[in-house]
Amino acid sequence: MPMYVEINGLDESGTVGEPILFVRLGASMLIEPQIILRNIEYFNALMASKDLLKGYEPSTLFKYVLSFIEDPSFDVTIFRMFPETQLKILRDLSLLTAEDLFGSRRTLVKLFDSKGKMAKIDQDTLSDVSQTINTLKRFRNPNFWLDSYIKSFGMMLITMKLENLSKAFSKPGFTSYFLVVQIDGGFPFAFWWRGIMDKIPCFKKGSFIVSGVSNGDEYYPSMSTAGVIAGSLLRNREKLHLFPVHPLEYENAVDLNGFFEGHSKAIERPTFQNRILFVGKIGKNVRTCIPYLMHLRDRHKTYEVFKVGRSISWFFRVYGHGYPENTVIVYGSNLTSRDKESIKFCKENKYPLRHVSEFREEFQEFIKTLSSEIEYAPVQKRKTLSSRLKRIENQCLSEFK
Image 1 (cartoon, helix red, strand yellow):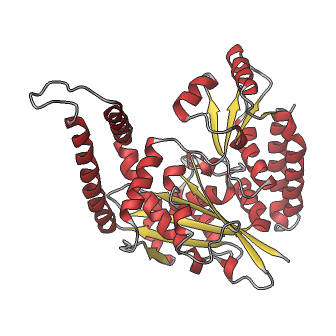
Image 2: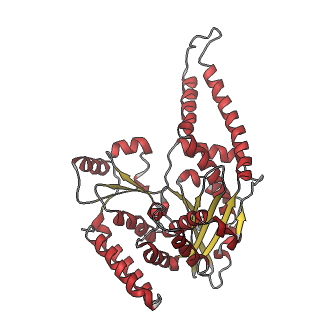
Image 3: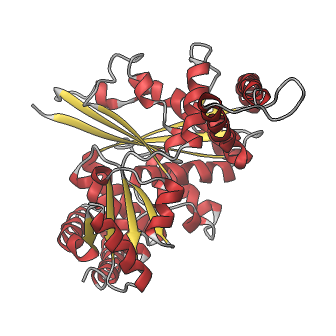
């Protein structure tokens, strides 16, 4: 039975208090290589992350955007959240936060007796105080807290609309589907995904998965392009009228208390579905390739990527140990003594270790796929694409050893 596999990349651009653009790029698994070839054509890179685009003219970026919007092979949907909608969400956030903080006040009051002196603290009170301390962690970065709350809310509303937007549910000739949703920003932007499965009948376990990925636009093509489209259109706002732009409205049907609690926990406690930790000196092109190669091997897993700059024990203290079964350690050849200690620590604690050279064959197969796709490009572009792809290949192969 043929299965239709659709990858949906979601990203946004904008600041809370001003209009925020959200973009969804839906692409069949089979045409994902075309995204990468366009990145090579326009930006001479496998992935078009936002940082890479700072030096490009708005007109160049707009041509890139048009190449996707005007191509029926891709499904681009643009959403805009106006400040009025943000204000409604922030009002409820303020009320829920005030209620939560007042509960924390009650915990702190218990620490004092009627004369204002420190009371005798029992184990239950100590546990409550510890919980209060964790609750206050969300305020250590207030800008991210507010930004992620608003944008996570928007990402959830868009994902709930996929029942009507995605081609996966209406594609002729397919008897089943698998829907992957990749959201740039990390777990706080996608913590809600299991909860919406109960509300949308077509989102079934085993055929629908959502991943929040920090800096996902650097490693996954659909997210990469969604981010470029959002950022480019924000820089070319006068051209937004050329495309259908859907307003994101406040949904009263959403369980606000559940959303508030879930987002708070996601901020307070780092959570990762799957992650890759790079140890040692590894070039950017190679780091860009490996997460996507692992995702191609298993579409159920979209890996968050971290470069361990200090010791691995420090990294785990800050970001959590996670579980060996959802963490992969990838290391290069040029290792410092600290890198070697990190690798030894991971080995002793049963974390899977992979040297970059182990990805060489997968990378070469990936390059073959891209090369074969170039044969279908317009004649005038083939030579340039082949030359640029060969240069990227040689750069990476020099490190896959």
